Image (cartoon, rainbow, N blue to C red; front, side, top):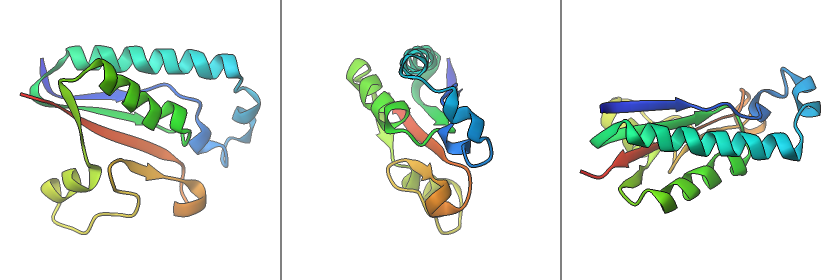
Length: 128
């Protein structure tokens, strides 16, 4: 069991399409469904290795809710011993600077809004 577990999940890469536009032609509904199944499995595996009081961090380079917020919602339905730790709160506890844009319940960056690749991060705390 670990204090911190990072799940850097394989994803569609939609957050990188401005730099890698060819990726959009590789994404099919079947591929997206397979990725979501993998993401759910990795979250479950990460949960098994997160000790009570520890944190499970989920990250993708996708901007699709079905790979991000929806995966977290499905995970929390299966794991009542975890709760979302708001990204803005985690930042405030860890770093003595103003929180960057995109921090709220989750960290979300998008090419259109932030001028950078798209990313998503959720911090989940295992209830002690």
